[in-house]
Length: 610
Image 1 (cartoon, rainbow, N blue to C red):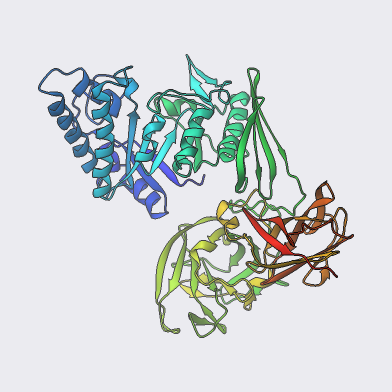
Image 2: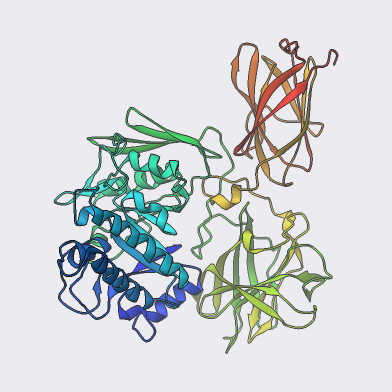
């Protein structure tokens, strides 16, 4: 299971010398952000969820500890009790400096000690959350806040707990989730669309992570989990996670691989909540709807267009994602390279390699992939005529590590850029590896010029490998809803100029070459006859490769034309049609062109001929 954030118990087990310290360290080395739940490593009677605890290493929630140490305590002044409580929390945060990424602040909710939100103690509680966050940041710790939405902006992340579900003598589906649109104070607990609007209006969606309950043994809750994931994506939250129902209580195993969910793409526009249904249009995946009623929850997808789609899962198994680029196996001194496949998506390079040793390697790595990102042999490590700017090394323990080159070209001088998502499988002397290299990790990557080569490794020496291959020779896949958001960030075309005549509309735009860009152009032609891209006629209708054009809407002599074309730099889009509808006497006509996520509005100058 691939995760970006993990919250762990803050016991001594995760600290240096503890039984789980190595696990936490390995997670962080792989880029996972690990947050520790605040715990009193010496006990002390301030446990989460109650007024006391029964031993050492007790989890401490902010609400219940404030209740016992400040609200219900009559010793000293309110200010003195507050300062003691804050110092107590800061001393716990000190335990995690340098050990984890940050601390998890639970029970950030005044409801743990009072229903009167105008009480002065609520002000002190709020100051405490702010001061504790500031203190943690000063010590190099991030902060993950769990509580009411009014405190969402205090942390680096905010947890939306019980997303789409709740607890009432057992976990239940919140059938009124989309109807709950009002609140009186951001410091009261609300769980529904009202929280979404608050987070959206305060710019906090991009740091909000939802978590839901899933019971792998009950098909009903699997449907809840799927719907919760899609709803979180519809709302534009930063992330979503789930766990077994015991996840909320005494721990337990986390179900993996049971939901069958996939990446949806970047949401466009705001969700619409009507008749218990929420939907939003997603670039490249269409309309996704989540419907909730008292009888249950359901979701549906209308892809809008048929794109070429390919789902790549890094599992060490080739399920048809890859085609062998080798005409025949390549023999080395001690191994044979049997299979080499690569998928070149908008955001990721996926490699699948199969090879066999003639005898067992006694030491060293398993595989090298040399990647020349700029196509220049004068830069990078010199091998087979290319200059490798990056090296992927798959080691005998199954890890894939990305290195950048810092040498003079001939010396072996590499710097680690971190671990990659890698799976290695083997049977005797036969090995196969699948791995993913995020393009955001590769500087100066030029798809049309980049080259690469692969080498099996025997006793730390390169052995079998093909000739240098061109990355541009691999079809660049159009993003589907299986692609992560980073693959869509650079798709916005920039309109350089436009011109309208009586029967022709010309738009010249710039953008990243080699990708497919979606242009939606409103034209003054009731029925366009054809579309040309850089002088070549584009097929009417969207084909299986995700290319073509079609009329989406017509009204009052105008038409909305959807164009999916492989981008060039620049690109000339010409729409031919019958005589245009009358242009206003101002000589200008405002037309909107949607390119990716941005609505570009510009003006066409009227010509009298053409």
